[in-house]
Image (tube, rainbow over all chains, first blue to last red; front, side):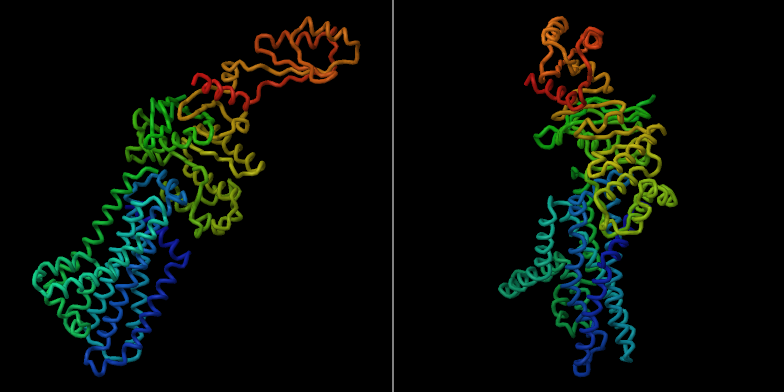
Length: 275
Length: 306
């Protein structure tokens, strides 16, 4: 446990030093504030809470940005250190390989959590400061949006490690990471939409649709944040959510599984790798 | 003296390429050993086997009584390793980097400053490693290997990139470690540099151990001739030819310099005759076989039967 924390601490230290933390926090804060103030215009006519509009905007932003940031941080973690030669030295120390991966995971997740919390928190704080009335339900939805964004980040950090443990060169890891991002964020949804339109509900029932949505972590995240109550009505995801019949518990469980499975696989692959 | 590292009949291949073939050797407490071989001879693979970073295909490796690849880390805390081409994260300072490794080895952090001073990095301790020169990075590498008073040090080509002054201070540190009873393994592709530094030399070629012993022992095994060169006095040619006829097959280098490669058995008699009062000799040089010649001899002996 001690070793994991030592490695995590070093990752955070490096993240602070090479401006990863600063850059991601500023990026998320800038985009969140922009969306907040541009998005506050239509609230009067739609009749939804001001913060709910922000949640819809930020969730859509998260789906594109957080997986990208997570993959950028993580795809280099193992293969990059091997190529630079730092991994050889690290593994000659009294530390297990799984401890290296866990330490890096905690460190990278801490960086991403910090960026999400303060980046998006800036938007909520700005809104509260301008005196817009916000009810408790909206605050809860906002908090769960931040937590699930961090969970989505954890999923893609773990996927990035798996890619990093499997490939022999950094360039390959980068290419695969971009491929994973495109697939999960853009192609999968387009393909799913196309299939649903062609199928017209004949063969794909609610059960299969649920399975297909859980098979992509970004869809699980989308449903979790955009599918419920007032936010659902606003985002237009309510219909899909009702058809898929997935509760928040199932969606969170799917995201946790999506984080743990690649992480375990990455640790296994890394443990067998020859230096 | 007890053995700190034992390698018994170890073979390791990468795919179909054999990297180490049936190597057996043991390293003792307080001993400095030179591991010499060409690039790609299997030196780094042997060191990685001793570190437990890779597992042997067959044979056994024991370091401080443990199997290093078994996942037991007690031995690793008393082991120092300096990789060939050591590298660090560029963003952290020297002190931060060394503190990180000290934490992993559970070494008190207040020793970090003294260690940086010992390798001559005290002034640059709070600068980023990215700004360091190659020699400074090598010294930081040495500092991390010295953390926690290690009993076994595996130094892979430690002096590449060091200038002569740093090289000197590096060997001073190695001498201190030897006096302290640590086993120090130095790998190198040049034997000459290690003359007088190593108690024992292990030569590897194409993955196999081809020689193991002190430099004196290797000299005796190799039976390389000693080169004797004499400068002749001004005298009539006949006297010189007469003297050559009595003593041996001297080669004429030029008008007044002669040379001979003396076998160990005839060396003394040749020297006596050249130093005797009737010999027309004004000056005399004796050059024992250099370590490079010795090394070339062992490599040549290995290649010949193939």
